[in-house]
Length: 179
Image 1 (cartoon, one colour):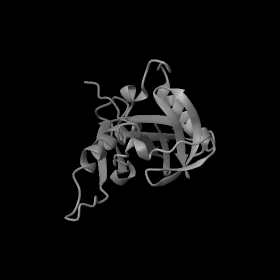
Image 2 (cartoon, rainbow, N blue to C red; image 1 turned 135 degrees about the vertical axis):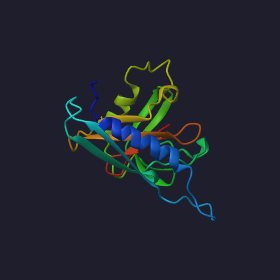
Image 3 (cartoon, rainbow, N blue to C red; image 1 turned 180 degrees about the vertical axis):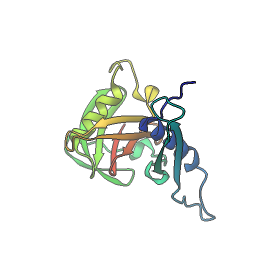
Image 4 (tube, rainbow, N blue to C red; image 1 turned 30 degrees about the vertical axis):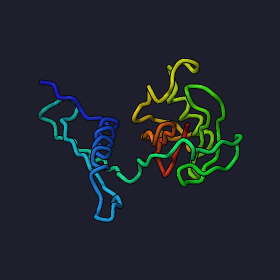
């Protein structure tokens, strides 16, 4: 019998799924949502050899990292590229302005360069038709984006936040907003 080894990407996906599942299940009497940490551990035989020592990997995700609040479309600002705006109570910079894939504004928070926003945009719209496809109908829960600034890959978790706004967050406090 051949056993598959577990990849870090699979473990990240499992941890994110557990995080999203449990994110809505916490809270106190005051209605505040408490941060929840989910840890997924999976053990698999290495190199397809069932007799080999098992390799164990643990991925921990902070459930409070992915925003889940709905933001009304009327609260979404418009401004030219480079303008500072507030999106869902967070300071952001408008990086891309235009009509394609059902979006008008792509912005990044203070921890996100416009170059990274552009790379996230490219990763999310890959394979879509700008005039026919609305990105919300094809939104991937997670996307891996390479940062032109750090040269590293980061996994972003994308969450719809109302009818129009989508926030993809992850890495080291990065957030890419589009609507």
